Length: 475
Image (cartoon, rainbow, N blue to C red; front, top):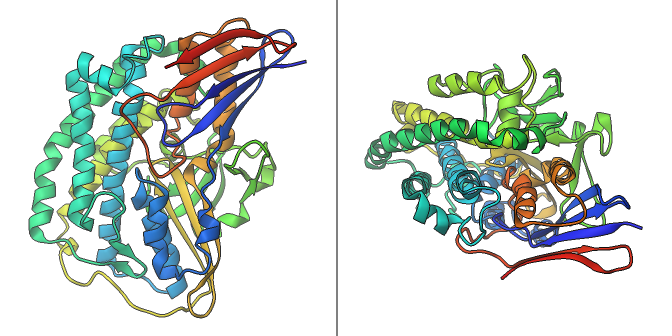
């Protein structure tokens, strides 16, 4: 008979989930499961709407990265219209996406993960949170707030508001960027560069303190998936979909709209989150990872000076010529991507072609199926729509970035639990380490989050006869 440890809910992630650890007779972890217990239903209640409405509707999927759904949905609409949008609109969409990646990665690193990294995995949960970080490391906390503020302010200047903007539409964007707003963004860049450079130095100084975590926090062979430019550079908006194996070999490279040729989805009865996998390897052997770590593993280069400098250092963390496999290094990858996005924002703002009125094209329904793909902060995001001749939605499939990491997240918490759980006792530190394994992927499970404060948590270890062997509770 097995025993089960339940961690419910998981804290400091966006949304609600629980973790169960299934122990064998010897008290060792035999299996770990990451249960997503929310049911949203977006794929069903969008049926009957027009594809023109979809960007505004699906942006409500997430309050942290609404831009990702806005872009993927609008790109699916572009496909239905059968048109190439104005080049200036492409640049503005990219600008919006880079700003979102900056603010989302800043939230993940400074607010959700820094309390563990700077205050200690084993520290008192009453202080191991954002408020504790503000008290004990105020400069770090302030930098995180300022960096996230930068990204949010750029989104507001472009799209009119920073949360759930309705600026990106099928065919382009609603309004151009004014010279005054361009200059305002340029003035904010130096502080943002300073903050991310300080954060990079801080994180690299911490590596020696977390040698064991680096070894067991999601360090296993897997596939990696992400967009790359036609030349193989780091990409977040368009390009080609590339899948590489654990040796760094390219298995597939194809237009992202053809993702169905290589990606399929499985379901399990214990989670509402789907389990995508690489079709040629089957389920569950076709596990892959997406997001910052994967994007740096699949690209040949970043394409900006500072990010390429950091990418060379990043790759020294793995075997020569092979991907960096430890999911602990998602933290490092996020900071490198922030640096890259800031450099790209600076580059595009210097382009005189960014200013002008032609930012939207117009057409009618020319295709009945549209696929939109973009890189969300957490990984590759797919929107797939089928419409009738009037543009009314008949079918929707959303392959969310967090879902793409589902198999890898389950494997990660199992690896961590097997390293730290002995089946006889539970400590706050052990619980937090398992939770941190999930936070590495920064999963986004719902459209809202509460970064300040603490959710209640109770963990029980139940013996073969149903007796409580250990009970850990948070108020």
